[in-house]
Image (cartoon, rainbow, N blue to C red; front, side, top):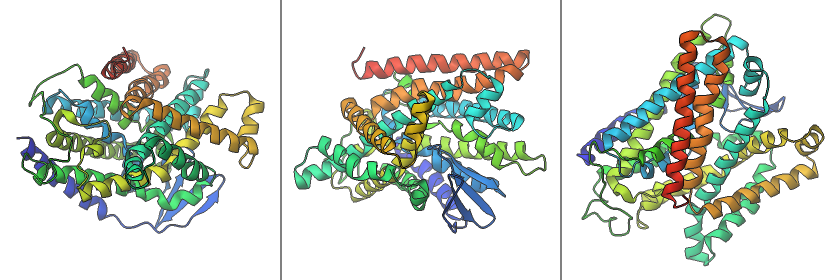
Length: 458
């Protein structure tokens, strides 16, 4: 049954990939414009903001193109942790949880976008200032914490991908590899203008679909079956939970989904980009939101189920590490993921650095934000090395992903939209806001508790 279901998911995924591949290619013209990056493609103009996950499509943006860009910048590497989070849980409850939290995340994303149109706000910070007023620092703090956690996860994936290769051929420990990549690649890239890195913006999307295809294909081609050619060199076991089993460990999956579904910093700029003065911005924003989250739910459910069918409860926090050393397709997927992480790190780090420095006194903020200043360079170096050290201390990406998804994802996906909507909600609406906020708090605390328990920390 697992392989039959995985095969069905594979066919659906191939159809979706073919649909995306049918999109017309972008013709890029890169040039900085007021600190932003402009990419032109036909009648579409896209701006890459300093938000690490926001690629904003402006002016004459079609629904399909905007949906493609949103999925491209949300999926990232969060789906790699979902299979490990589903250990001990049956297929149907796990897929149901992916769909349920995807639907709730979709709804809260809609709330933020509609409120942004109401207040004509172009980012979450200005939206918070208009709707709530005080304590705008809380938004900067959440962005800094989330992006900092994402930077830690990126360092962890660098160690997972490049560490074994360097150790095999050069006999250098993975920890040294993490520091070397941080100093020789990540730190210099963080000093470049984001416009210079825009040519690699599609690498992340290609990596996501290539990795998803590899996971789905290996689940159905028989090479990891009991007598498969790659089984002996893989890390696999039986999957517990069967079809409908339920386990408290599902809260770890909910925590990982909190990270995987964080798209909400994109909502205000995306809503603004769909406003053409014809009164149809809300309708177009809803279409983009529903289409994007439908693709994300299908992608996450398919990858999670395929990984579970292949490796059972032995799936590691980065499921790519389960594949055998002799698997060429898995090696290509790992290297593609590693390359996209290296070139995607500056975007994540930019959000981390800028939001963190905005929390400092104004004089310090001005000094540290100066683009070519020595203090900014030194500050960037310190934060790059700090996040690398935290990644090494964490051991694997499961711990930071679980904590970031449960606590930070719980705030951004559930609590923040409820707080912004609260002042303009009626009696029924406020009940909904309260339920949404309580769901975020409950899932956040329980998910964090289960994550810490899984690592023996409590």
